[in-house]
Image 1 (cartoon, rainbow, N blue to C red):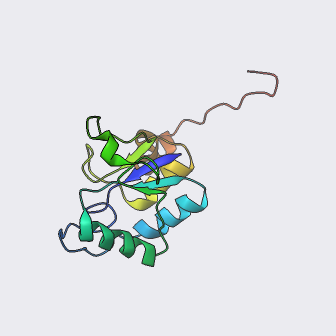
Image 2 (tube, one colour):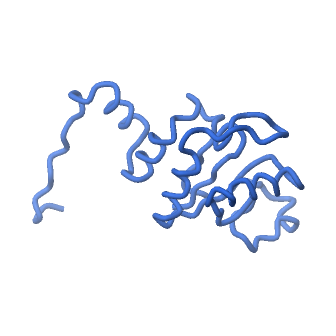
Length: 141
């Protein structure tokens, strides 16, 4: 899965232009996702030295992104000036989504176990209400 990840407010606390303190378990979770062969793209408003500092901050913590502010490492963004800069990803992890940023354990649970936010919340809020999905027999399709 290709996943876009914001930096300020998502990996670290908002302290822009400085780099804030890490949000608990952010880099640990990102390393686990990389180990599971997900392609992570850092997608941030930072540019220039501020961007370089953010990438280095992540690298020092063992998080190497597949690409930074582009769909793939070799993409020449200067040739895409007339096109939308919307990434072609499967998932976005960003603190600016509706409802805010779930904790990184919840994020990992959703991605690793292919669950929706609704499913995870239902399990967390009322575990006994979670319906067990009937298992299909081997001959059922």
